[in-house]
Image (cartoon, rainbow, N blue to C red; front, side):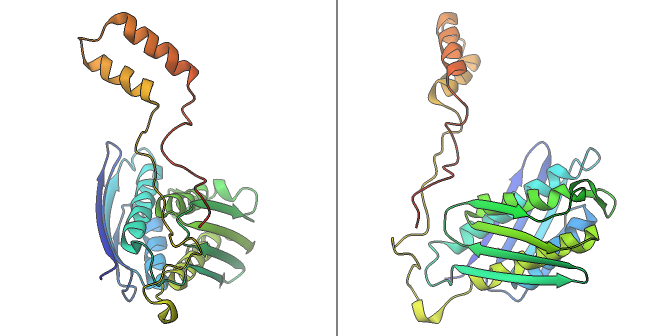
Length: 254
């Protein structure tokens, strides 16, 4: 079965059309309207051997943040979709990649348990402007977005580095190499899910808000709901933390 995915995501802030093939040769076509991010995603595809076609645009007149973040989200979702139930993959991998004075290490577990740790970047890197309007802080944001939406565990550690361009590129290339080996089929376990539990996926909830909040939102659009009912729902919402929603960040360990 082909390990491919095609996802289109449109919001008021951006539009992303992304296709990938996990069993490719690293062929890429990247157009995100953010030149330095094009460079990084080209490197990610090239060194992971993932064929990657991305056409994205957004409100870069405001900031590159939305377009970069949404592209990373869609890449993560596509990676998760293409991996399927992850039968026969190696699952764990790490890679240490240099770029002149910079040295980055990425460790990946395609676990179905999203987690991301980034460390070692020098103080002030997050404020560095790279290539015109790509800030250093976006590197970590991209790593986190990919990890959570691909449902992988990622540890990214910068061992050394001074030049912001070199730091960012070393980190993207380290992720690429780690992904290449982690998603690669292992002929010794063909058809077998590499987990003692027999599964590398988990069910995430579909409710974005607590139930009462959903009721309140629909009542605003539905004039048949009484005013007192709306007030009671609103009162309950204030007592219900928003955190009780969407993403189960700590599912059972696979």
